[in-house]
Length: 235
Picture 1: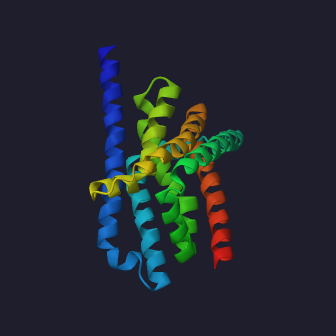
Picture 2 (picture 1 turned 180 degrees about the horizontal axis):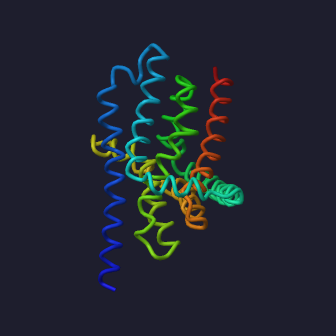
């Protein structure tokens, strides 16, 4: 019993370590490529932005290669239905949460605003990173890394959903560290975590990381399409 608890703790620490690696790699890459990431030349900026996510995927892919290869070989067509089902439920709950939160904050989430700006300025890199590469990077980071740390699926789903949600309001913590207390940004933890919960549920139901990846990809693809349309209309 004690040995099992120790294993769970080690697996949880492994998950936290993966998240730390994710942010450290992102920060270092962004600093080193700061002159290129938002370059006035759209081609240079696009390449730099894609490179950061590809680098993250390579690093995480090496660490979790056995899991990724195993799940790829064992992925079944019916998993797509499970991915779609959980995404639709998660999207519905997220939508309701966003309406409630927006009524209090009177604005959109900082993360949402940042994504809108990126899509408007760099549509190609946004499509590649947000729809294809980013979801897999995040599913490895926030889901696969914690899979063995919990015995109950709902504990796994709740904990990873909260971590996932917190990562998507990271701009709040950046503001907080600079002395700007935007407490309303914390409210967006609920819609992001609600969506993350059902991504985790999709993963746990099939024990295949690509199930939650597809659910995540469906969501981001819809968001990018809608934001591109808004950008075109606004332009």
